[in-house]
Length: 215
Image (cartoon, rainbow, N blue to C red; front, top):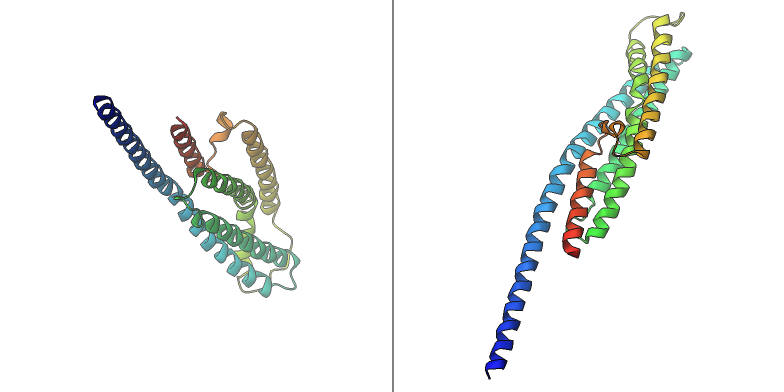
């Protein structure tokens, strides 16, 4: 009977320790998921502003090209602003859908896959909708000028060509920098804020949680 009592007590203690470990793991996971939600808030806010910016660019672009159908330079600028605005809205919508549809209560592996997809799309968004602002600010100025009353015919000012040349060089340099950072994620080159900081922190959180669960 004493041996049976000892076995029962040992089994009860083992079950209690197992419940305690499970409770600690659940609490850790809950804290990690709360932190993960906070890490994604800047991304959600940034995407909201991106969508609003895209809407403004569409409005400006349409107004510009509609008023200047007979002025090739202003027509092209208006169409470029219109298209770039649509691109910004599209990426903002896609990324918001990916982030909002993430089930943080699901399996860690599934969350990691969604975060890596989110990271790839946000990196693409940064390169296609962020880097071109080296050039787009000039196009915005041209688009606003195209709304002014009166004739717009005449030679393009030299400062526009110079600014566009600098903008093209800056865009290409930014893309080259981003490509180098992708190959060397731990280098100084990877410290450019491309909106992926919160996603990367979440991946690190989940890696830590996965290691804890394995141990």
